[in-house]
Structure formats: structure tokens, C-alpha cells
Image (cartoon, rainbow over all chains, first blue to last red; front, side, top):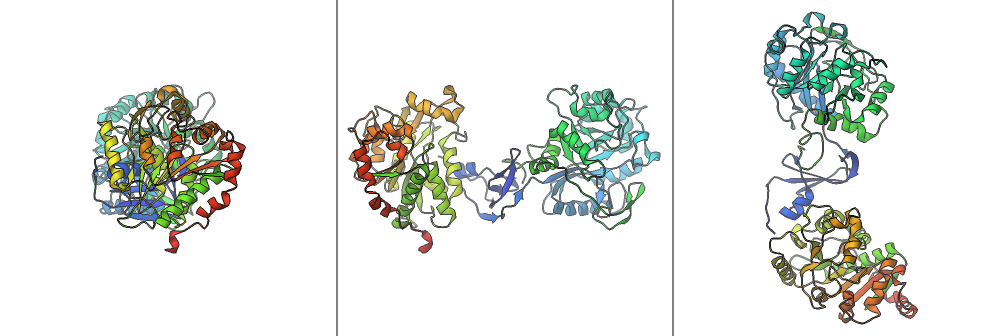
Amino acid sequence: MVQQIVSDAPIVQFTNCRILRSHQLQREDLWVRDGKILNPEKLFFDEKGSADIQLDCKDSIITPGFIDVQINGGFGVDFSLATDDFKSGIDLVSQKILSHGVTSFCPTLVTSPPSVYHQVLPQISIRNGGVHGAGILGAHLEGPFISKEKKGAHPEHCLRTFEAGAFQDLLATYGSLDCVRIVTLAPEMKRSSEVIQELTKRGICVSLGHSVANLSQAEEAVQHGATFITHLFNAMLPFHHRDPGIVGLLTSDKIPAGRRVFYGMISDGIHTNPAALRIAHRAHPKGLVLVTDAIAGMGLAPGRHTLGQQVVEIDGLNTYIAGCSVETALEAASLHPAQLLGIEHKKGTLNYDSDA
Amino acid sequence: MRLVILEDYDQASEWAAKYICNRIIQFKPSQGRYFTLGLPTGSTPLGCYKKLIEYHKNGDLSFKYVKTFNMDEYVGLPRNHPESYHSYMWNNFFKHIDIDPNNAHILDGNAPDLQAECDAFEKKIEEAGGIDLFVGGIGPDGHIAFNEPGSSLSSRTRLKTLAMDTILANAKYFDGDLSKVPTMALTVGVGTVMDAREVMILITGAHKAFALYKAIEEGVNHMWTVSAFQQHPRTIFVCDEDATLELRVKTVKYFKGLMHVHNKLVDPLYSMKEN
């Protein structure tokens, strides 16, 4: 038997813990080396290795880090404001959300004028997380190609269409798509199919939101590549039994084979009634992705804060957890967003060889 | 032989684990003076392994100076297959204790030269100073390790083709699909186990009763290879009531009558904490 030492880095064994693996909380030790989850059996037989450090977790749960794909800012930082210290702002948020269990995120920009995108986007770089802060998976651009009727808190004067030049219009508005991971748009807009196809081809996740699309328009968008729904139920037509609209994608039979539509939910009990959240979850449990949609005021005292071009008043904060199993909730915040972004081989699980 | 009869599976498992624990501790293993243990797989020893793990977790037993040699391994099954004996030993024993991975020896069923692998295994046992205590089980066909009926009673570690009885017994681990069960295995020989200074055979359950009868109440016979241990100077058979169902009442009464002697081997139960 050949002994092959793979690395000299110290091996850490977390004991006396419950880990989320294979959709269940299991009583198993977790082994980590060099920032990756290790297979201890392979270590034992192939390398004849053992743990250098053992940590007693006193029966805690170890879960994959949460991935927040919709977060507009926090702690006084607003990702849609082109300030001089934007970079340090993103670093601050990235560092602070770690203590909330978020290890990767997509800084989200709400509808803004092109100048903001041109100044801000080049300052966002995709990078791995670590002790310094959560990793950045890329920007989520929510708007400006959204519906006027469903603009929500987005500023009307910045809304745009891509009727004239389709993808070129989009590119001109944003300036660069280098570090963009998700784009939310309204699929009923003219020439959206071309745009969706082009974005999908470039590996960018297309999300449907802030829209008055009916179910067939939504299904067409999915057929062209869209895979996500931005904050289900909010800023879209309500479910109607003769035309379920975007909500109908959860049970649509027109989704291409092998594809899954994910849907973001803000489960604070305010954006959506818990009963509605449960209906969505029961209809399509594997597609649920928990998002915060947090704004600059998160983590700060009540008062006035910005949300891009708007000013918002904060008055206390609310959280709510839908009545489901711990494993389901944990997976909705880690595994599912990883699957949405196609990175579940590296993130969102505690499987061997994934990022620790 | 000693025939130790306990009431049920759990008690038999515990008695066996206590015995192993005491033997290791009384040996006083240390750096350069290892206790060598032969180990089995299958459903019978699971309870025993659980108890040994319990003693370890309580701080009473350490495997730091213990070397282990498993009896067998399937040929051609990937090492990380959930039914390989490597997986079995990792999940049911090694991952819960403090044994040095360099001291845990299991035959490699995927070695390029299988006979060379077997010869090397014999050599490793020799270099370790021989086996102090070889723990084994018995198959329904009376085999020890994979020494199927007809195996030479002086055999050494080698490649064996599995008998149909064994394949049928193992099918439950492969979704009941006979075609998925490996047909060949590397196994220590009867002679290899006979070389151990002490042998302990665990036998539980009514389905093993006939094999036990053949092994200890009939003659030494290569069709029931466990019978070879009638000629070993120190063998203990640990069983539950059900496993004795085919024995003579006289045999059972005699050995039950000796339980007060047998129990001195496990009571007091020693602990490394005292050292």
C-alpha cells in the first residue's frame, strides 16, 4: 500500500457535533484541511493520517455557510450608492454578515441610473470568503429593466426598456457584466427573450421579478434560460386560478427537463404571510431559496436610511421562521442557493472536497 | 476450549468486549510493545465493537499501542464501496477510537498481485510478533473467515472463491441482489488463525446453532473449518442461548456450570485510568 501524504496543513476534527449532510442532521465528526472538507476514511487508509487538532463542539449543529443572493447593503452601507469608499463599504458588510452565518453573498443593486452602475460595478470583485469576511459571488442587478406597475421601492425615473437594442441596451446601461452573477428583469418586456438567452449564454443567472407577466410569458422566459424568481409573491401579479402568473412556475409543466426553477423568499413574516410561504414551500420544496433583501438600515438603529435613490424609514426589525424542519430551513439558505448558482460541488454543503 | 454461554446477543457482545478490554490492559501495551488483535466483520461482532468504543470514549481503554489485522476483504470491490470491509471497519470501529492508522492492517482486495498481497500480510503479522488474540465469527457453513468448506486446515492467507452459502448470507448487504455480491475474497488461512496465541470465536443466533454443533461436538473436519480450533490450546467460544440450540443438554449444562469461573476473566473489568 503506497503512503501518500497529500498536504502538510493541519487537520482539524470537529467532534461532538451534528452536521447537515445528505439532507439530514447526522451525528458525525467534520474534518477540515486547507479550507476544504476532508474525507476522513480516505485520510485514514490512503494517507495513514489523523487529526492534529480536535475541537469539541458540545452538541452544536454545523451547517454549510448561508448564501444570500439578494442583499442591498447593511450596517449603513448601500450597494446602490456610488460613494468614494464603496470598497470599504462592501468589506464592512462582508465582514459583519459572517456573524449571521452568511459566508457568501451577491451584493445587490436596485434600479439606478447608468452612472451608478458604471462607477460601482468595476469596484465589485468576485473573491473567496475567509476570516476577513464572506465571499462575494458576483453582483445581483435588480432592475432597471422592470415593470413600472411593479416597481415597489425602486425609483420610477430610472426604469428602462431594451426595446431598441435588446442586449446592447442592457450592456450600455450596466457598462460591464464581468462581475455580475444575477440579473432580475421583467420578462413581458419586448425583446426580453433575446436578452435572457444572451445573459444565460454568458453564465449569468436570469431572475424574473418586478413584473406583470402572465404564466406563459414567464414560462417562455424559463425556456430561454431564466432560472430564478425574485422575492416570490412580492412585486408580481398575485396568484389567480385562471392565470397563476409567475407564481405558477412553481408547478408549471413547461419547465425544460432537467431544469429547476428556484424562487427567493423573504421569510420575515411581513413581505409574505407565513401561510403563503408554506403554500409555496409545499408546492415546490426543492426550489426555496431564503434571501434577506436587506437594506443599508440592517443592523442599525431606527431612522432614515437610503435604498439607492430612495430614502427609507426604519422602525424596528422583524424575523420569522416558517414552521418547517431545521434541515429544510438550513438547506433553503445554503444548498438551494448553491444549486441555483451552479456551485453546489464547492459550496452549500458539507460534502467531502467542498469549501469549508 | 472454554464455552461461555450468555443469555442474549447484547450480553454475549458485552462479555466478549470486556474480555478483549481486560486482555489489552493486562498486557500493558506501550511504545514498542504492541498488543496484536485479529478482527472480524459481519453482523455478529457489531455489538462487541460498540462496547469497545464505549470503553474507549469513557477513557477506560486506549488503542494507541494496539495493532490490528483483519481477517479478510472482498476482491474487486472498490475500497470506498459502502460494503467493503475497509468501510465496515472505518464506520464501525476505527473512526471512533484512537488507533494509529499505520497499525490497522486490512488486506487490499484491489492489489495488482493478490498472492503477493497475501504473502505480505503474513509477513506483517510475523513482523508484529504474531497475534495475541484473534477474534472471529463463524459462518452458517461452519467457516472461519472465508475458509469455506474444504479449505485446508493448515492453510495460509490466500485468495478464495466464496461458497454459495456465503454468497447467499451476504446478499442482504447488497440489496438482496446475488449478482452484486463479490464472488472472491482474500482471507487469512485456518493455519494463520491457529498460530495466534489465543482465539475467541463469537457465535450468536439460532441460524448459527448447527454450525456450532458441528464445530465443537463433532470431529475435526475440513468441511467445518472452525472445528480446527479443537486443537488450539487457548480457544474461547462466546455465544448466546440461541446459538446452543443444537448442542447436547449435557454440554450446555457443563459449561453453564463453569460460568462463575469464566466470569472471573471479565470481573473486575480493568481500566487504563488506573495506570
